[in-house]
Every structure is written in structure tokens, then in C-alpha cells.
Length: 483
Ligand code: NAP
Image 1 (cartoon, rainbow, N blue to C red):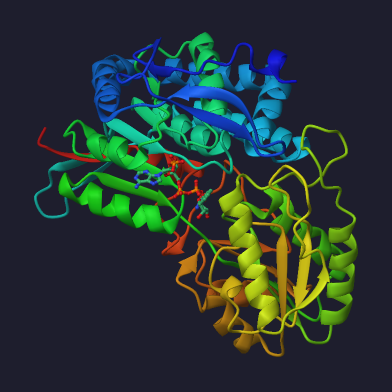
Image 2 (cartoon, rainbow, N blue to C red):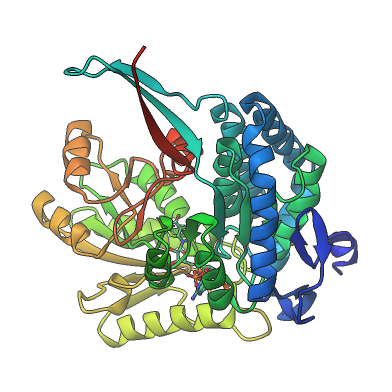
């Protein structure tokens, strides 16, 4: 069933521009979440392989950093074009290893490619600054240098986009990278490597090392003094561990971590627009997104209508194998993910939540879970504190602006919040009081390569995308000049 799709996808480690087995010959299986069948077996890097990848990256650093920014930009631009050329093949591959519906995978490929186009343009905007020191009169010349070898660690929920969101700015800045993809979804990144080669990325500039021993492999690299930045996207729990590891060699951390997004619907909202936004904010990627709406706060005056309309939309989704056209809800990525969603729903229902649709695990193979809407979710429900990471909308009511701001902010996370109101002055007033790095004001989607993506509080450190994304991979150097 997958032969044509998988025939040319490499499954070994990519180090120094060459494909190689792991040093202990270990491999691990990649599973299709829709069928629970093995689709490939991939080499599993050891810590020694990881250091070989750092060697290769370090060897490539000087040459890559010395390339003219325009040359680096043109390679990235070419990579953008080649991904668009191969978009359908890549989208199907994402669906096979991640499970998401093909429409979601196509959107991800387009989004992933954009990080190369955007950073092709950013590569030539590494601007410095010059001023005159107020007292000494010396010139203060500020310039930015590539930080050095970058270790990139990515999650399974966007196997292409979370990688290109890091590789794009790193390469634009002049940094070589070693990327460790998630074990559930290593194939997409491996399939991107021949594309990057064709675009002209020299050997050693991008190295890819899937591994089942993530902790040991990443730790080995963070303790190699040539590594100067770790850019991680994943759970807050693993992010904390990496911050500890990075401290030993004072490696710069760039952290995109978990979220617990509130979605606030005021009584004056355009309800149809709010429902449309809710479906995107909740159901993009089957709810397996850090930006996924986790807590719906709906004003008591419009709660019933909102819940009814959302239930109608959610129950109209078509669940099935994401490769089949017309399917809008694929399986979750693995059984652990499904178990987590199921136990959060059971907990909420036990404590008094009402199920308006879904809530029951289907029989048969595949890690499927239906689109589910819960109302009357009590404050004690675990799903209001933990990321659900699945197709479950939990709705509560509120009565006043101050109350909903307080409840929305009552979380250790601060990635994104959504709010719907026709009153833009209220929209901006509430936005300013919400402690979240991103706000969707009358919008259910905030991700954009041209915007600074990232969280406050325990949702992260630093930003990806926009000009900030490039700056993460640059060091500031100031030269005090007399002339
Ligand atoms: P995860 O378990 O934290 O894993 C993320 C990556 O870290 C994977 O490559 C994983 O490898 C690796 N890893 C796991 N344990 C490690 C360790 N001890 N040391 C070094 N690396 C380790 O997260 P996930 O389940 O893949 O992704 C879901 C999480 O990502 C959610 O919390 C979501 O909110 C967050 N996320 C955040 C953003 C954002 O931009 N803020 C975007 C997308 C996702 P293995 O796969 O081999 O375990």
C-alpha cells in the first residue's frame, strides 16, 4: 500500500552529507497510526553517532558562515521551490507516519516551505548598527555573528514545519545544524534531506539523526563544547530537562514548549465566525497542536447557541484513514496519546461534565478518537490544567470580563489565547491583560512565518519566525572603534 510512497525515502542517519547506519546497527520501527502497521525501520543514532554529526557540522561551519548571505538565501529559496514541487508526496508521507488528514498535511507542507522562503529573504537582513559613545566619542559598531553549531530537537505533531522553522533561520544566519526528529515521525525529515541536497545545501550543514535514545543522544551533544545553541520544540517537561542539561556548558536555549490555550467568546461576538475559528483552533491537527484551544470560556448569554453549533460542526467531521480523500479527522499519533485523551475525558465526566458528542473510543485498528464536545466541565477537571492534545472541546461559561481574564491567566502556560468580540477596543484591552505570547483576536489561527511565534511563562523562551527567529541564531558583537 505504501510501496510507491516509501520507495525512495531514506531510512539511515544523514551525517556529513552521507547516509550511514548507526554505530551499533540498531533500528526502530515507524508505525502508521491509522492501521497500527509498521511502515519502515529507521537507524537509531547512538551518542557516538551524535558526536560524529557534531564533528561534521563543526567542519562545515566556517565554509557555510563565510558564504555570502545572498548565496545562502538563494539555496533556501531553492529549497522552498523544491518542497512545493514535491508537496503532495511529502504530505502523504506526513499522513502515513503522523496520522493527520491529508488536508492538514498539505497545509503543513505549505507552512513548512514558507519558513525557507521567509528565511531566504531574512538571510540578507542581518543588519548591524553604528553609534557614537556619548562620553568617550568612540564609535560603537554592533554586528551579528552566527552562534555556531545548533542542536535542533523536534516533536511529532508537525514533522516538517517544526524542523524547517528551525533549519530556515539557522541556515540563514550561517549556522550548521544537527537535527533529532521525534521517534514517531522521523521519515518526513529524512525525506527532506535529498531535497536540501538538491537545493545546494553542502554536506555537514544539515545532519539528521533519528534515535530511540533521545535523552542520551541529546545530552552527549549538549556536553560537547562546540555546540552553542539548543533549539527545542516539545513538551514543557522535556524542555525543563534540556534547560538543566544546557546549563552545564551555558548553551543558549531556544524553547517552544507546551500550551493550555483559552478560547474566549464574548456575548457580542460574531458567533458564526467564532465557531469557524474554534474549529481551526481546536481541530487543526486533530487537536494535537501546542496552539490547540484547550479551554473554551463562553459568555453565559451565548453559551447554549455556541455549544449547539460547535457540536453540529464537530459531529459532522469524517473520521478515518487520513490518506482517504474526504477524511477530516485522522487517528491520534499513538496509543499513549489516545489513552491520555480518554483518561482526561473520563475524569471530566466523572466530575460532572456532560458529553454533547463523541466521548467513546471506536473499535478496530488505528488510534482513533472521535471529535468530542463537553459542557459543564467543572473547575476540578484535569483537562483544564493539562494539554488535552486531542479532538476534545471543553466548554465553561463566564459572566464578566475581569473574571474571564483571571481564569484564562490561571495556568503556568502562556503560549496562545483566542478571543472573539465585535468590540475591538475590548479586544485590545483584554489582549493586553492576557499573559500569552500570541493572541488570536477574532482569529483561530496565529501561526505565520512572518510573525514571532512563542510563549510566555512555562511555554517557552525565545521566538521562532519573523526577524526574531533569525536573531536566535546570531550572537551580538560590539566593536569599540577609534578612528
Ligand atoms: P516531547 O515528548 O517533549 O518530545 C519532543 C522531542 O524531544 C522528541 O524529538 C523527543 O524524542 C525528544 N525527547 C524526549 N525526551 C527527551 C530527553 N530526555 N532529552 C532530549 N530529547 C528528548 O514532545 P512531543 O510529545 O513530541 O510533542 C508534543 C509537545 O510539544 C506538546 O507539549 C506540545 O505543546 C509541544 N509543542 C510545542 C510547540 C511550540 O511551538 N510551542 C509546537 C509543537 C509542539 P522521542 O520522540 O524520541 O521521544
